[in-house]
Length: 173
Ligand code: K1U
Ligand code: ZN
Image 1: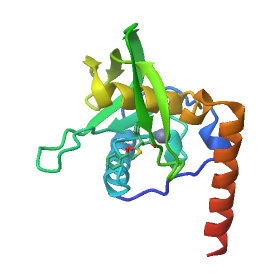
Image 2: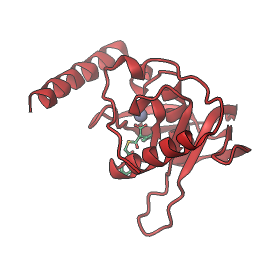
Image 3: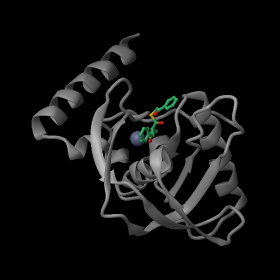
Image 4: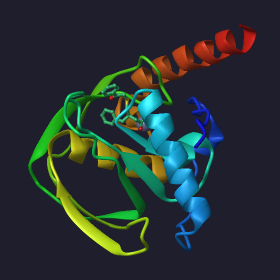
């Protein structure tokens, strides 16, 4: 298991549509294991493969926020939203590729998602609450979309400039 560096916005690798995973190989299993370790270490509640520079349709998440409760690590290969509720929910989102930047984003409150599991078998589940917000945020990453794309151009530019400065400062340190 290895922690992988998380790409920071702006980076062209975060803007490409990820390619489907052709087969669940041991290499995909190792990538998922590394991504879960990287997510827990960050800490975060989700992570998509493009955030670690891998252009494949794979995401991990664990939205159990109570540290006393058992973890529920999930690995979704080639996830697809099969259904989204008309009801919407607003949540203050963050992103490990945009540290310390937050914005209220409105999305469907509930979604039914289909994916392939690490065992190669199809799976399907309906998500609500933070799980629903997180899985939509992560599928957006697979499509090269970031939460700032839901904001006004002005606010997006402001956040992007802050991130460019952060990257310059980190490169100098
Ligand atoms: O995709 C990512 O960059 C991960 C991101 C997922 C996410 C957060 C909030 C709403 C939707 C999607 C994060 O995990 S940001 C960090 C975070 O939310 C968190 C960190 C520590 C404890 C609990 C949450
Ligand atoms: Zn993110």
